[in-house]
Length: 483
Image: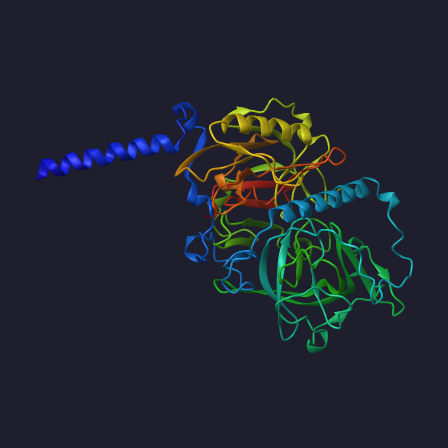
């Protein structure tokens, strides 16, 4: 009986070994060391929220959730359908806006005269819109006394914090009530003569001498009165953070309805004076966006008490000052696929500049860099059936993986100034467009010939802990992360 059991176990082992060899599509062992070997079903996000899978680094960390996933309070445990073609379209619109902002900053003398008095908006003046921001992750906070709940999207490429207010002239749909200034004893409109009427709002004055802001997000926008209010962020682990007075935009005319999925506004985290980072003492923050939107991530404002945590963070310098650029600029020096550097001169990565932007989903590469990445990736994926894209707006390196149990996907690394190497997780390399796994694509985007700014998006950074050191003028990648 015992001998029979051993023979059955040995036979089962041989069957499993044959199955593994078949699922790997007969990849040579040398290639496997530079590749991710994954079960194809692991590329699909679960439909149930799993908060236990996230490793939170400190008691000071706030929960960050995806507006698409089941952990979102707005979705009420339901998964929101994703339209990746629409997300790509929003990314491209945002890239054009970022490029225009960078150009404007370099030619600051062409700025409009913000001191002129004009009526900033009127009923029915909703701008034309074809796309908006693709910002995905948000936190929950409160404004006012007593506090009113706001769900704010995190955006490292924006300065102003805004939320929709009553009486709204033209607002997008949201799942919670609009912020009502009349119900708050701490609300105060900022006059044009006040120092709180910051220049990065691009403010103008209305006839009542109120400071009016107007902010663009790709081809969407928000405008309204600039005000001060009590901002409260409650953390169940570490207590309450309060900032008063906090300068924000009380949005009365908003056209970003196609961009937001029930959230009330945006919290800006860039390097300009109006941002949350500049207004508070939190000059250092880190975050980890989850690799699967079915689990939460986190954001930590300020440094934690554990100094050992920061010894292993690899930093790359920000080459510009906050006066020169509102963004977290970065310098890429190279990329590698399966351990092999792309045959692209280092100057191609940075000739038009580069930024890290949480408001962009898919990393946008200059055409020459994208072509080299695409060629190297396709070469390593040659054992799998490649399928044609649905349209010119879709991803163009896609594969039918529906017939495999396991697949071998080449590793991709990004190199930054300072000798920093960032190895991407497998869910930062490919995106699943069809649930039956018949369309799994390389998750990078190509910038246009006229706009070659390199933008490192949040999709490639999922599962990776990202550090922003405002004072030290650097961006880092830590060994910690979230699943």
